[in-house]
Image (tube, rainbow, N blue to C red; front, side, top):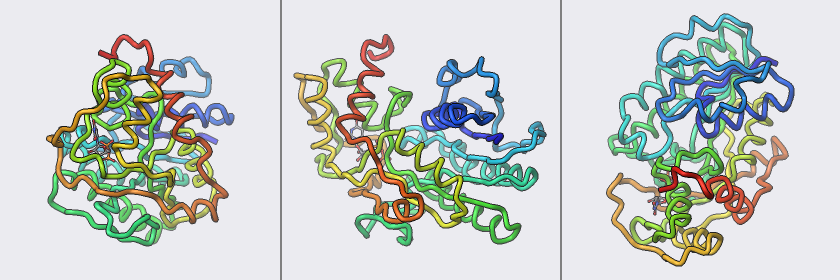
Length: 315
Ligand code: UDP
């Protein structure tokens, strides 16, 4: 198959490029590098089945003329700090970018898969979150540029499916970590790993009692590949249901890195509307895709820490 991955140079996109090449497919990555880097794909650029195109998907993608089998849309700023700094870009890529990639899939008669997010559930009042939950999103909060853009993107995908019969899929991605996350993207995993490897105290925002459920990137990639090859149009959560408070998570990182510096509590100056709990209900992924996460937090963090250890940009 020939597979186009918008956002292919990003953290998750680059892992998808690798996986589809390994499975024998042809991969075209499209990226404007606003929150990513070509360095994430440096090891693939000589691959005979790989092409990297620098383009902004908020513009029509008329330069792409090849037949395509699958279009995966993973292009968006995705960390709270990024979408706070890039609010209009985040809204545009979720709206115009989704329309342009949907039009591309329609023109080429490709399957379309949207990377959506657990943020569509906002600060959830239902726990854990099944796909049938409509969410609790503040439409005017600072996170709304991402949450509402992704909710809009889901609506656009369903409209293309209903109007044109486009073969569409929606994956709702829960917190994902692993190699190639930007060390300065402000999210908790890169922050904690960077701080721990520098033997600095880990910064806990608020009281650390808020929870997240972290999945290793390889598990997510497996779920996405499986979903893309089904004909399931309804959204599917892909995430690891093992839930930790941020305080528990900090202790795990400090233990794995032998960090003597402990933790420090700080007010979260970045952003308000921090969801207090988050945990996926993955029954649908399990039933439809036979999928469940395989890599636990200790193994995933050990691999991630090994990736960053000794790097000169840690400081
Ligand atoms: N967080 C923290 N310290 C940090 C970075 C994040 O305590 O240095 C907290 C943040 O307040 C949130 C959780 O960790 O409750 C996850 O934040 P992240 O930015 O990774 O992603 P989110 O799940 O909020 O999109």
